[in-house]
Image 1 (cartoon, rainbow, N blue to C red):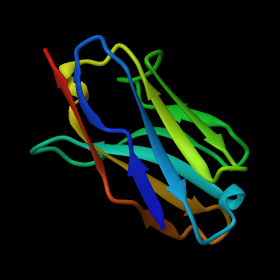
Image 2: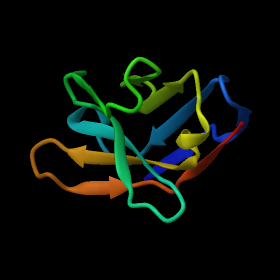
Image 3: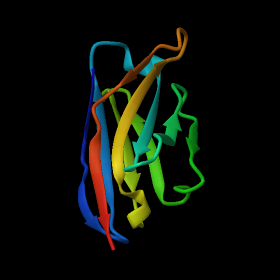
Length: 115
C-alpha cells in the first residue's frame, strides 16, 4: 500500500514536500515515481528514483523539484520549490517492482499553487 501526503495550497514561488509511505513489501526492490494529473490533462511523470537511487525528472520540473528516498523509512519524497500555478495537480506516487515490473499506485494528494 502507498499513502501519499503533504499536498496543500501554496502561493507561487513557495515550497511543499510530498511524502509517500509504503507498506507490505521490500521497499528497496521498487523503483518509485511521482506523477501528476492536472484537470483535463493526462497523468504525467514528474520524477522517478530507481531502486539504485538514480533519478529522472520531467523537463518542466528540473532544477525545482527533488526526489529522494529513505529505504529505512519505506518512504519516497518529492521536494518542490519555486512552485508555479502550472504545477497545480493531483500528485500520485507509483511503485514498480524492479524484477516483475508490477505497478502499484497510491491515492493522490492535491497541490494547488495560487498566482
